[in-house]
Image (cartoon, rainbow, N blue to C red; front, side, top):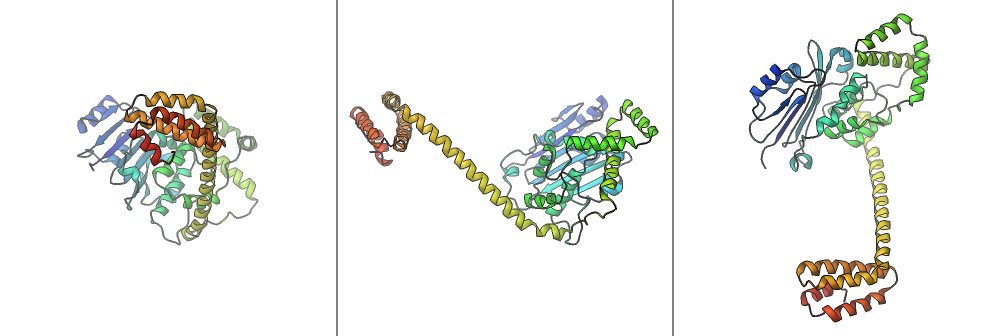
Length: 383
């Protein structure tokens, strides 16, 4: 199997200048380069540069995949998007963060040590991932920490954590992942049972009407000066920053209103999360069996409807088989055999077995001298 590596980068907040595109072209003569990004596949050789350095200098997002079962996803966000303490609670090796003067570079990665994932070995894995994962950037900029928690869970799945380590702050909505968050879980090959255990303790996202009602109550007690400052930021094009900050402040206010002085549920340890994996697996397998049984039932019902339609057309189908056999070649015999077999099943199901026998006798009176055709019928037990 030949080597395969895929690199894709995207510039989101600011397009690449002509000079920057020229700098990248000097490093790759074959890549597709535009003001919005870079992508290339390598079947020999490698990228002439460090992806992390490119993220620091040029890009806001990056996806990498190689057929030795390694993949990586990076996002660059303004440093003001998250406090250092927030980022530090989630990060380690499989999910890390690099700080620059202006940005956080978040780095999710996965390596398949088992060598069993056909995703890497039977197909070119890279194309399409960045489009699916890029919405995570906007979610993070709006204060959604679920992608950070999924990164921590990747560390857990990668056996990076100790039993006594505690989980980071648990975000709401882990049972209601966005499409991009579900794609991240897929990209990182997260254990679905561990994800289910983690999500079981996660609160549901509030309904839109409840958020609106709560936000209205909160806004009414906000100082007028702060509201005016937020409006000025919106007009100045800083809408995402305002949304992130205000969401965080609203959530803090909401928490203070609902807690009534009570203490929050303690963070679980890795060992406690691991303990729930077996039960989650049994639930998942039972659910999959139910889904498979339902799928088979639908399939059988559809097949029964089809056979009923075939039985209604029995006379016409006999004529079609007769015409097909007149071609006298292997392809015609195969097509006719398929039609006869289906007709036999349809008439058997309809309680018209004798009718099938009479029809087959009539057919053989015309085409019984075709040894290859008759041999197929005999082998299938239709004669």
